[in-house]
Length: 114
Length: 112
Image (cartoon, rainbow over all chains, first blue to last red; front, side, top):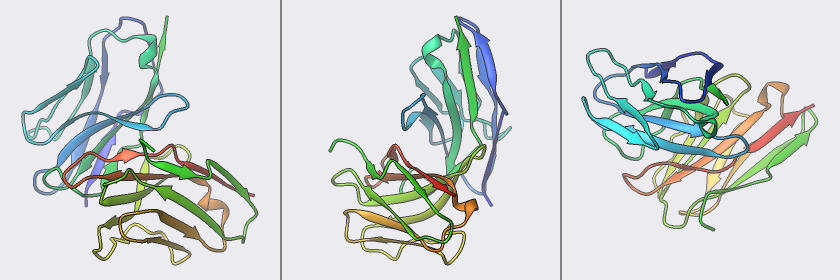
């Protein structure tokens, strides 16, 4: 079946540091890949997505590239801010982007210190 | 409202009691999903409704769990004879055809 494995947290970084949160997946066919974010006290929000190999999703300075050869979708940001402190979830949908259930990783808690 | 609305936001109940959780999706969203997040774990899919099609119940963990949705409106997730392992945050999401899933703030369920 489908599965997502992401970097275990918690991750603590200083402001302006470079961020990478690793995510790898197992899926048949050609899944669509997502990063969701949950800020303290808020609901889960879509951060970015990619629907085919070599696509790069980006939003709020974050980027992730769909790498089919390594089955990865690592999240990166060049200079993190305190406001980026949150829990980040990598997820996939089987097949093309559409009405399908999401398979999530366990989440990575990120804390940015000033 | 503008977003997915879930109620109650918190529910504390005794083991063995039944509970009902409610989800009000975004207007016009034909698909509705229920997920569960237990402490320290990722989100687990429970059930998925798409319009008037038969729901995908493949994620329901036992026959104590059931869900209903009438048309494209409100959904109710019912847990009968609750157990302590049912303690979790229950999240609802909705989407348009081909669109992103939008999540509610969840119901935090605690079984004493």
